Length: 438
Image (tube, rainbow, N blue to C red):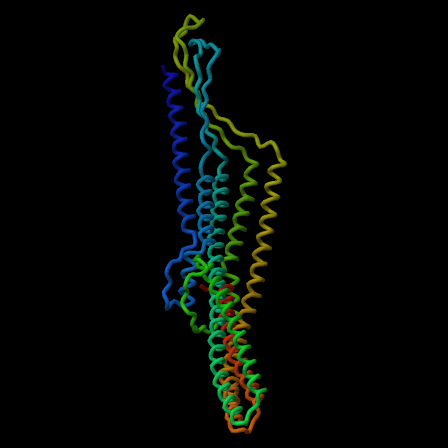
């Protein structure tokens, strides 16, 4: 009976363990299903007054790559308690033709054994797992910076294409007004059919620019909607010019990037993880311990005249023998190589960040200077030259070719200026990403 009771307890424990495992697996499955459901493209509403930063916020909430990165953190964090825990104990039941003692024949032996790793082994493995999870958190922050940069890039491409459409339409209206003037001069025998042909050709060229700008607008909208995890044809607010704050000093931005950028932090976390793995590999040279207890059920009958059927309880203590050197040396070599790899990786990240910060900073400075130059000198002068040429042509003092030349220069400067503004926005986006500014 005692043997049956002991066996029943062991079976119940085993079955309860299976049920717990199934429960956990079922919960994880539901969690994954819910996470997957949130990654589907959804045509959620965006305010018509939303600017670039509001779109960045929406992308950071809805981009599927960020959902994947968050699940990766959960997955790696779940490894920490696994590394901290003791191995499952082992239970044994022995029956059959067993030995006979003075107290009587042994009916069965049941035992329980627990492996206890050498002190420090579990802590080292748990610390390494924790640092991998920390690295994944830093990677998530880096991915957020990248997504924000891509949204800002797409927004400024959207802005530029929209402005190109606007300027081209306004230019077409100007050309149509000039066309009326040319018609009037031709009727008065003060103009030529060649002038009419020239203005018609220029209007056709502007129509071509409008078609191209419309295509670029649609492409930019599709890119933005993809980053927002929305269907490509979803409505977006009209792009508007937003102020771009002045950058801090170059040296401050570089220092911030080298110390605070998530890509650097991720490399440093992995470096620490390999250091913990090195400690774990060195601890493999020390034995693990085995602690066990055994219970022997003794029969009342036996060959011995003094057989009393008294059951026996025994405690066992054992240890592993770290005999094979080759795998331990390989683990140490692996950890040392990982440390060197991560040190080089951190140095590489810092060098790349310095380059990115410097490039974006100088591009932003150049764009600001160009915007000032176009606003204060080039565009006002081009407008004045075009107006004077048009007045002179109307008075018959200047050729129509001069009017077209001045108009072309003005249009070119207007388009170039919007390109300067878009370049400033993109340079600022790159600078924020490289300097870890969200």
